[in-house]
Length: 296
Image (cartoon, rainbow, N blue to C red):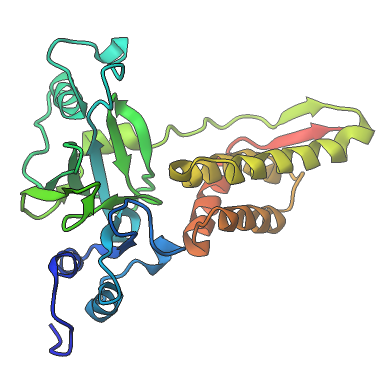
């Protein structure tokens, strides 16, 4: 550790410890879960000097960028009130929160619960289970894909790190260990289902409606991105890229033009250009498996 770093407070120490594990950190607004900087994924860092300079300017909370850190983090939440109850598929006397759902999921698949890994208790009493992403996998955030109250943070996502306090409640380590590998069975459940190769889809439209249809398609997908909720920007960008990628593959739209328009929409909602373009490229590749043409 360089000798010219300023004295460490609790948050700075925690940020440096996370960076020492190879996890990319960035500042969150003090007392909040919201990023204190734009393009947070690009600016997340493991550089101790940059971290020290940042936390010397304020009592920031700590964000850990899952994608650059090579992490998939299981976010096991608790109900937000008496009306927040499990759906029928997960309704059982022994299921009260996301931790119970994950335990039941492990039992259904005949697999052990991922307990021997770095684990954090959130301010609201939930659990974050840190796991390392498999090499070459394009895993993204998910909401409820594994089950009720079980979300994941991967590429395009982040979690609040230990050393942070939200609404007066701290995030604390409950099991201090190296992050274990994401079990292959969980990776299989989280991978997006591949689109089956299909013949180009033809949309029967009159000749004079051809351009209008394409224009409306682009406008609609850009609106999907710019109108998406704060925690769904990256997923909306991916879905929009898949939809327009079908038209690109069908020869109806120019790939460079589509990429530029989607990147501009992503910038409007605060996404970093590098990560946005990775998401766009991934979506265009998926969309290319189902080319789509607009018939004259």
